[in-house]
Image (tube, rainbow, N blue to C red):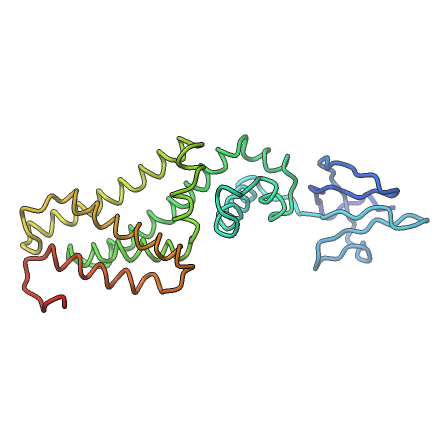
Length: 265
């Protein structure tokens, strides 16, 4: 038996196999483990063995209690990774639960619905993208350089989070989760606005043609990123995304620029 003089508090959050092959659906069970208890706890694999006088009676995955915010981040990160590995439309909460070592009920203690979980994924993506955009705008005061930095930041984030193109065209976003669709559309609109602002500054500085409608040009630049990301995904990421994006962006910017440059071909 385990001594109840606790030095660490841990939780079982997985199914436990008990004695005679019966299954006990995980109830939140707190186990108090004394500092001297080492023999049956494998810290490397995180398995706890409870042994009776007769035989091995229980083996459960044991997880340290984490703050709710930390656990939520862990779940969202796993969801984003699995969206890439499995595809957004094949992703289940059971797969997420297995990836983080929890049960499905434990997932729903943190996110009431799967739709809410997807919104948290979108929020994580948005946080990363907005931080990358902010850093990109610090690189220079030159509008053309800032536009290039924004586009390259977007491409680098897609490389870092390769599930993004699949999420954009998933049934989850297009049909089943209107709030997710709206959040992604809002994020795209923010990038369009940043690009349009830099294009306007470039027009005032005499860098870009003044007759160009800046919002339409910004939409073209965002479409360049989206189209390239889809080609990269369909091509099983058979080329380097960022260098290809830089090459195509240079072509686009030449078309918008007043300055005379060498011919494209």
